Length: 135
Image (cartoon, rainbow, N blue to C red; front, side, top):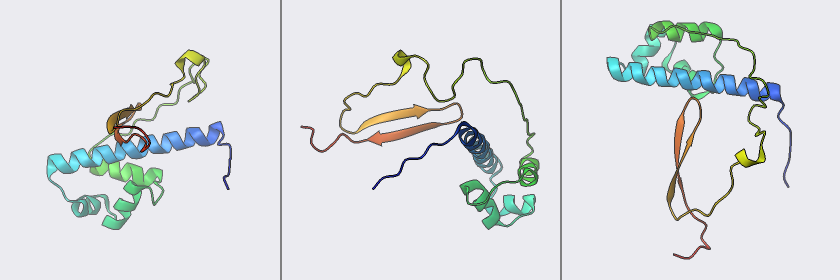
């Protein structure tokens, strides 16, 4: 049994914002901890929260409030910048306007490395060809 549901533009936009902010915070925490040789415990203490709470914020198990975001940014000696702008004209979010821009499927080589990039991150996947392909 499968289920199909439609995620509206509002939910997509909110998810994208939350995901981008969380990605930025994680990257800043990793850079700070590496540069300053700071443990997660010590960073959490400088923020004024427990290590478990910091881990919950970073893993997405606990929602970030604006106050907690400000506290984390302060501990990292970072400035928060929020920009509200008009959407680009004709933009449909994640949808393609022209059929020629739609990615097409292709046969993958066995154990091919696939890179997927977004505006905020790069992810690398190790893709395995299906078992029914000949070696």
